Length: 123
Image 1: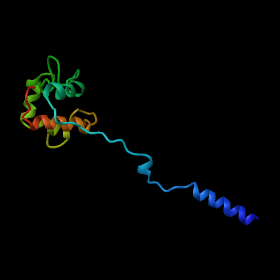
Image 2: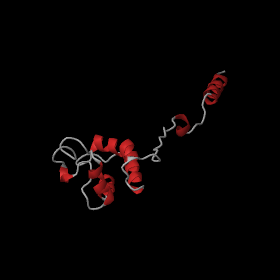
Image 3: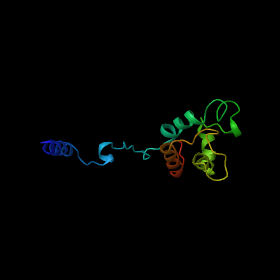
Image 4: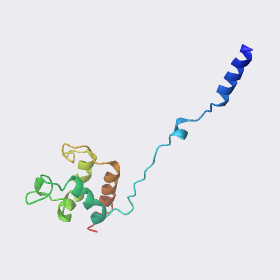
């Protein structure tokens, strides 16, 4: 009798189990980064205002290195000479930006790079 109960318990236990991959049970949320509409006013300027054109950095009457990033003329200079991409990608010989802070998120970097590669227009 004990053997019958043991077999039934094992059978019940095995029938309630199933084999699923963790990725099926806990799917990773995917996000996309839309860089197709990267413009100065709609994309780059808001990023600059949030991370660069802040008090004590690239804004105000005496911005860092004389470059005010809350104005197109200031950001266009470093977009043209390649320093903007190097700074935000933490590559090359320029100082990584934002200074003493973590790197921008990859989507923001991709949007800025796209805008620069499209000719950094004042749009």
